Length: 96
Image (cartoon, rainbow, N blue to C red; front, side):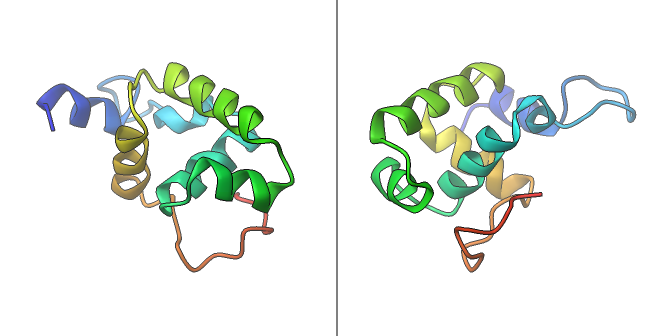
C-alpha cells in the first residue's frame, strides 16, 4: 500500500489535537464503515440494516469521498488500522 494512504489513516493533520478522519462521518456512515471493516459485503450490509444495496453503495461512495479514499480495500484497511471494526459485534448494535 502506498505511503500516502497510511498517512491518511492517522488524522486530518499533523497536530495531536486533530480528530481522526472517521469523525467526519455521520453515525450511519460510521456504522457502514465498521461493517465493511468486518469484511461484510454491500449485500450483507444492506440485509443486516434493512437497506437496499444501492443505498449502501451510495453510503460507501460518500465514505470514500469524505475519507479521501478510492477503494473498499482502503476502507477495510483504515477500519483495521484504527481498531473500529469488530467481527464479533452484533450487526444491530449501535456503532458508537
